[in-house]
Length: 326
Image 1 (spheres, rainbow, N blue to C red):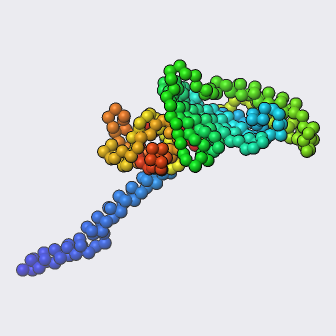
Image 2 (tube, one colour):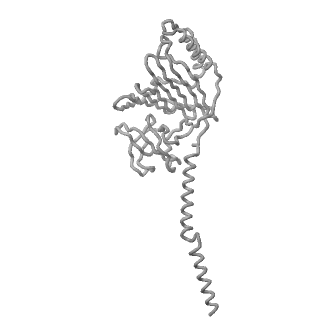
Image 3 (cartoon, rainbow, N blue to C red):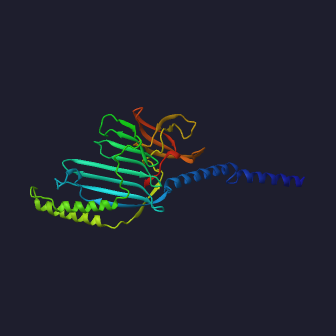
């Protein structure tokens, strides 16, 4: 009888220990769930703070401290700035992007910018010329380095947004500059501009001496910049867009935009490689699709010219092009 009493007492103590001690079965389950949630939060933070993966880019820049292209060398008091940059892959030295931009004042304001994209083999993929809200933007798409499509966008200041797309006939000459191998030409041109400034006649200006002094100073800057040794710096990556607001170039034509990240979701629209104004909203899950490989889905925002409105949707990462980003 005594032994049964002892066993009963031990059983009560054991049950009390299991159910009453801190960190019992229920709290342990809660703790496990909290740890899982914290791990997911930490992983998300790491994704947001970690720098996007990509290849290192080297770049070289020339600066024009004075711009008088629009003035035909007749209005020497024209002012402005000009930046010409070349971006190449640090490993292969292949040029993947060239940009040119400027802002001038010569009987009125004039902003402009050019952008040229190349694949990793150095073949042209896209070019964009424009950058002024009062003039057209022209995007030229290339296939295997040969221009095949051209899209002309109405000026941003127009009340109604318009776009005309045309095919470029084989053999047709496209008026597209090729700056890839012309760094030395730019340097020579800068020296020429320095000479033009030194020869300007400011006798009719309100303060001739002040204009002459400013022209001399800018002429010296041009000459110095023109003689500058080409020094490549590393501050950029060649990668796909990864941060909200970054521009998205679409690779291909008739690329489906879907309502959700998945091929079973509804098709909202189609995009092409000449589409401007495609902006990244977020990077979603990755997925393996036969013949396309494993890529993330990208949520984007863009203007649909067919619907005449802004649209948000998802495109598969196989159709998102690499570009130069900080």
